[in-house]
Length: 503
Ligand SMILES: Cc1cc2nc3c(=O)[nH]c(=O)nc-3n(C[C@H](O)[C@H](O)[C@H](O)COP(=O)(O)OP(=O)(O)OC[C@H]3O[C@@H](n4cnc5c(N)ncnc54)[C@H](O)[C@@H]3O)c2cc1C
Image (cartoon, rainbow, N blue to C red; front, side, top):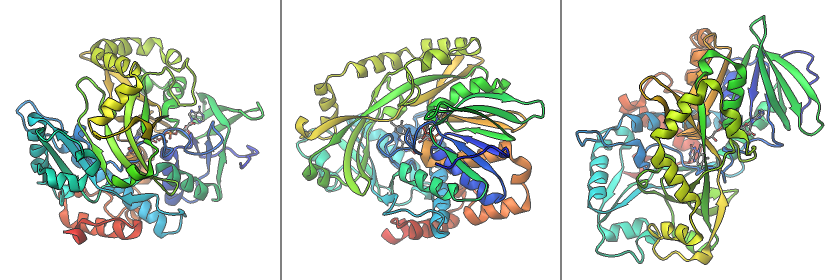
């Protein structure tokens, strides 16, 4: 751990050492090398909460397989704008990661990102019709070029043998397949970004340091109070800009900042669990991320999926997530987190969101009450021949869904991510968790636009951003040629499959 003597206060404080702080820290140092940054993390290592590979699904979200990104509209048509935005954002992330690798900024033993087919799988007439329609709607856009669709059991058995073996032959089934999907070890990537950052002049990284308080100073800087969890020591640090990238811990700190923009926000924790396969012969037979359709009343992030993963150089197979309820906001948090987050200004939105989301509450209660056999039954809908002795239950990460004020309903529960920033741009917090790590770069670019607006518009920053992210400022969904160029480059640098070479 690097120790700061606190002799000079930094320009920037990043709270939390997850993928969001890592991304913002590297972006800022590349854009302005003389900027000084202090990073405070309450645990003894980086990326030990949501960003760790075992705590998230590692899906490079591109909307290739996630059916909740393409809702059905009232007229029966498929809404694709969210899918396009997420696919564009992931291309932005890949460009930034390629820049890090090409410039030797990060050194990754083995690949942190790999190509793995992304598939959507459904059964039943209505779901098959939906998938067919979704496939037609998406493939109108070049971002989804190369997506395949099939209802042929033989073809499906080739694509996903575990899912087709032992399945009722009278059941109507369909799947889409996108060969250029990815599996990402976000934890590994995050740790390597911090390895790079902490060696730079003007950057200090403090593990075991928990930020407890935030207060605006008369000179418009922020003062934070930090507790060293190892020694019990306390310190005060002042900075011109604070990023609250504390994952599930962000809401509490936003509340403590007392900025008017943060009023009325609440959080609803949803925990997760996976079934992890322990049989190497079974693991070997599956080679895809296969996403299904969420059960009625369930939150979008609990869409079941059977996923091939590559974690610490080893191939794994996970099924889930099973949703659960815990009052903790962080996996290593406190059972009082939810109670402590309730304030006068968010009580109404939280109650209104609670009343409006009774099906979700019911769903979570049902999930918590599941027996091991219930969990196996859910798995067998995807993998009919699954045997209980081949699967072990593991805890996934904790998510805190955003609750916010809503003029019509009093309060709403949201499933996305939200950057909340002060009007003067001196502080920003990231709330929520989806689509999450895959879109970290776009989220942080949005944050730079709010909090470093003048610098972002300068010729120097614009030129550097173009160097790091060649498509910066140009929506890839509107420009097929640019997408082709960008994908060719990132695929080469990151060692990924490229659709142009495959078809
Ligand atoms: C079950 C699950 C599945 C997911 N699947 C995917 C997926 O497939 N693809 C994808 O792109 N995203 C996925 N996500 C979302 C993704 O994991 C998150 O969006 C991302 O990791 C959030 O990064 P972060 O840096 O904001 O938070 P985190 O990684 O949680 O980091 C926050 C850090 O802040 C620290 N901290 C908290 N409070 C304090 C404090 N007071 N002082 C100092 N430090 C503090 C914490 O210890 C932690 O290290 C998933 C998440 C979950 C839970």
